[in-house]
Amino acid sequence: MANNAEDIENNMETNTAPETTQQPQEAGVTRVRSRGGSGAGGGNGGGGDGGSSGPEQNGQPPAARPPRVVETEEDEDEELTLKYGAKHVIMLFVPVTLCMVVVVATIKSVRFYTQSDGQRLIYTPFPEDKVTVAQRALHSILNATIMITVIIVMTLVLVLLYKYRCYKVIQGWLFLSSLLLLFFFSYIYLKEVFKTYNVAMDYFTLAIIIWNFGVVGMICIHWKGPLRLQQAYLIMISALMALVFIKYLPEWTAWLILAVISVYDLLAVLCPKGPLRILVETAQERNEPIFPALIYSSTMVWLVNMADTDRPKRNSTEVASPQLESQEAAASPAPSSPSQDDGGFTPSWVNQQQHQLGTLQSTEDTRREIQNMPSARPVEDDDEERGVKLGLGDFIFYSMLVGKASAAASGDWNTTLACFVAILIGLCLTLLLLAIFKKALPALPISIFFGLVFYFATDNLVQPFMDKLALHQFYI
Image (cartoon, rainbow, N blue to C red; front, top):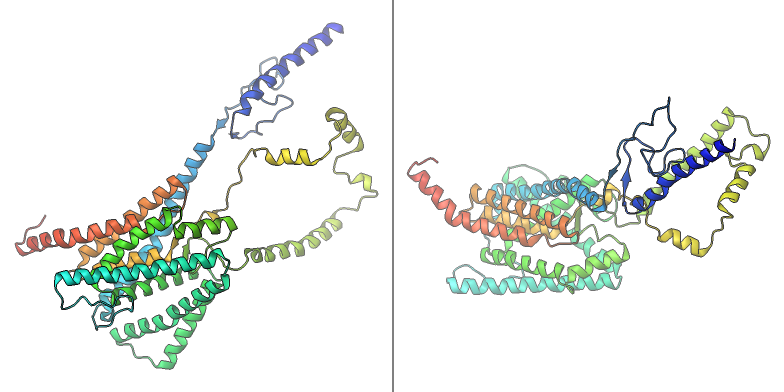
C-alpha cells in the first residue's frame, strides 16, 4: 500500500509539472480561440497542457488534442479592417452616387439651373461676363475670397456655440436652414420640373405635396425616423444645395471655390487648432453625436436621448417575465423549504471552497485590481457603431463639381463621367487612409483634386482628340 501511495504521489507530481511550465507561456498569449474545444482551462485538472492531460484508455496514451489558433491583436485589427473596409466603401459610394445622379439628371433635363438670368448670390458681388480675362480672373478671386471668408466665419461661430453648449441656438439655426431647403427650394425645384415636363398641377395640390414632404423631412432629420428615409432626405438636401450653387455661382468662381475649399478642409481637420478638429474632439470628449442635420451616417444617429430606444425592450421583458414565472410555477412544484433551492451551492460546498481558497472578501483594493486587469476577450462594438459618417458639405461639393462639369459649355458625357469616376477614386483612397490612421480625415482634398485634374484634362485634351477622331471617322 505504501508503494502504491508513493506511485500515486509521483504521478500527481508529474501531472502538475506541465501545468506550471505552461502558465508562463499562456501569459504571453493575447487571445486564444479553441477549435471545438472547451477553452484554455478545460479538462479534468490538466489545465494548460492540451496533449498530456486525460487518463489513459485501454493502456494507450490519450489522443492529442487539436492545436489551438493564436491570434494577436494586430491580426484581429487587420481582420476588422478587411471586413468593414469594403462594406464602408459601398455604404458611402451608394449615397454619393445617388446625390450626383440627381444633380446631373436635373442639369441635363431642367434648363432653369443652367441658364444665366443675371442673378448672383450676395456672397459673389463681382460679375464675370463681358469683361477681359484679367478682370474675370480678378473677380473670381475676389468672389472666392468672400465666399471662403463667410464659410470660415460661420464655422467658427458654430464651433464656439457648440463649445459653450449653446445647443438651442445651434438647433434653431439648423432647423431654419432645413426648413428653408425642404420647403422653399423644394417648391422651386418641383415647379421647374413640372414646367419642364409639362405637368399640370394646381397650387393647392402642390402645397399639400410640399407640406407633407417638408414636415416628414423635418421629423426624420431633427427627431426620429426610419434610417433609409433620413438618408434619402439628407441626400435630397445636399442635391438641392448643390443645384443652387451651380445656378448662382459664376463659372470661374465655382472652380476656384472648389480648389480653395478643399485646402481649407484639409487645414480645418488636420491642424491642431483647426475648427473642424476642435468640433470633432469636443464631441468625442463629451461622448455626444454631432448634429444629424450636418452629418450623413450609414447608421442611425438621433439627436434625442438614445436611452429611449431601450424602453420598449425593457418593458417587453418586464411584461414577459411574470408570465414566464407563472408558467414555471405551474409546471414545477414550489420548494418545500429555502434550503432545497440553493442552486447547488450547499453549505458543504461553501465550506470546502473556503477551506481551499480561504475567506473571500471584497475590498476597494481588490475591486480596483480586478477592474484594471485586461479582459481576456475585448468587447466588440456593435455593427451600428461602426458606421461611416460623411459631412453634407462633402456631398454638396462633390455634386457641385460633377454638375458644373455637366453644365459647362463643352460639358459632354465624357467629361461628366471622368469627374464622377475621379470623385469615387478619391473617396476610396480617403477611406483607405481612414482605415490606416483611424482618425477623422478630410474627405474633400483628394476627391476634389482628382475631379479638377480629370475635368480640365478631359475637357482640354481628351474631348478635342475624340472630336478629331469623329471628324475624320477614325475608330480606336
